[in-house]
Length: 431
Ligand code: KE4
Image (tube, rainbow, N blue to C red; front, side, top):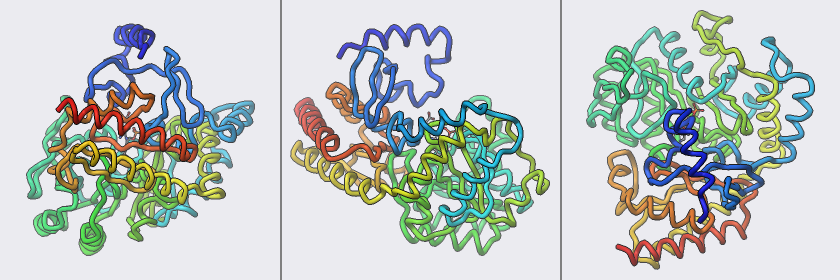
């Protein structure tokens, strides 16, 4: 593969931008090598500066469920930008998008738009604390909710462990009210509520985890989350920034039939532009300023241009739902990967919901960070580069989900399986 233009671009960027990237997820830290600089995307494909074509399985880390440069989303942007991109004043478009989100997501009766998933989760936990007048927030190891100071905490031991910061600049004071538990650990959750019940403001989780790779919650875990938060007057927050409009129009809460008190959204709801959102029951959200006392604000929140792209994307998901096709293609891909790994004699776990999936190089099913962290990341990086050389662009970490779009049809899925078959055989030989 010719990557000289990406290499040159990377050298230049490193002189200007920390690590040459505007988000560390893009830096190839987990797989080594030089980050690939992209020139353009079209449908399911990405094209880098050197002209290499890739089948894209990142989709901008989730937003592009309709693929790159979708004509209907571009048309909505073109029509909108002629009238101006942001006014710092309310527009009807924001209500039109809000109505669609409220109709689609079971828990959402009121919604506030912000500019990123991080802003959404940061605001949601502030509301939970403001409404309950309590301090403690529970999160789970391996769950990522954006770079919110109080949620950047190391995984504690199994018991309810007070969080310790895992980034310089995050103070003990910021994380002392964050409890870190193990995902899918019902006993751990129960003991945290036994210990701290009436001090817990809220519990935040990825209702289908994507940030340690794809990990599905057990039904007992979901029932315990809903039951314990209700019994103790704590706010249950589903962070659906990744799963919202991805696994179903109503997200994971529709798939599982479990309705949280608040939901955070992002990625797909911006159609490729920066939009985040948090929402929930009216009685909770009406505590948000200026309706209520909990402060939150943002210069470009709900700006007409980003809202137009988000609305075009969500309207198409509502009117032409691709979820059945996405699940069929996901099943085809998962079966193809599984067979290829089996034929190569490699132990893998393929974990998937709809069009988000992870191939773990792991001996056992991954149910939480304790098992995810045993994955063979060395094998994963060989898989990543082997697929890259065969024109398939995967997320650059074992601890991420791959995503595909409604434009990844059978030919693209089969091309991906063929690339995986060759790559996995190569890895098995090099063992
Ligand atoms: P943003 O602030 O990056 O828009 O959203 C943060 C966030 C919140 N909640 C969940 C469940 C998320 O997955 C994310 C962001 N996801 C990562 C990828 N796993 C974004 C990639 C990146 O950081 O560049």
